Image 1 (tube, rainbow, N blue to C red):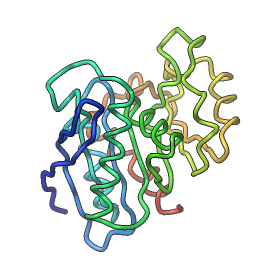
Image 2 (image 1 turned 180 degrees about the vertical axis):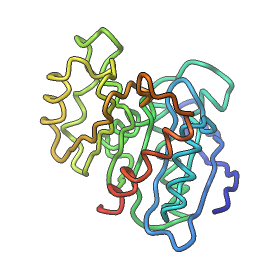
Image 3 (image 1 turned 45 degrees about the vertical axis):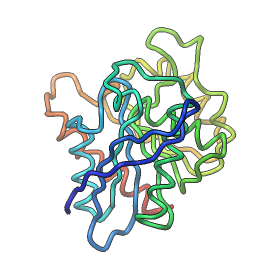
Image 4 (image 1 turned 30 degrees about the vertical axis):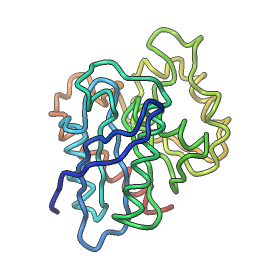
Length: 222
């Protein structure tokens, strides 16, 4: 599967801009996903590279991309509307390159921003996959990021590590999932927010690749 760099137009409140992307078209693709990075790493992070390559090997085309704050060389994410606008631009670009249904997939921050865009009705994926949904900052469950999730009507898959501090306590997370219209959870035994398991060291690309069957199975079912 070949990967080519692309440029994606994004309409920000301050004016139009572009962000970088990587388009990997699988031969005879059976599904398509857009894959967003988290707040602390860009689209070239080994976790996303491993996941993307493994998805391609299973017949899933993948569009990775960066948010404007990464494009500008900044460390901290910009305002949520900038990320939502980026998701809109991604969907528009994909509609020309690979018309048809797609699933929006995102690691942590990237997945949460996809959920906001979907809840606001500015994108229309066939489904959403959250790779470690950041329900709240670690140790601050009193500030859950949940209000918009019940408004999402498409299927949602939460891929979560059992030891992820971003979703503790578990009872609160279970309540959030139950409030969604169509949501399910795939648990990674012993996994943290990066799906690392204590005592079982693996490179980030292998961790990402290991999640490909879960993601591919879900998007093929949409």
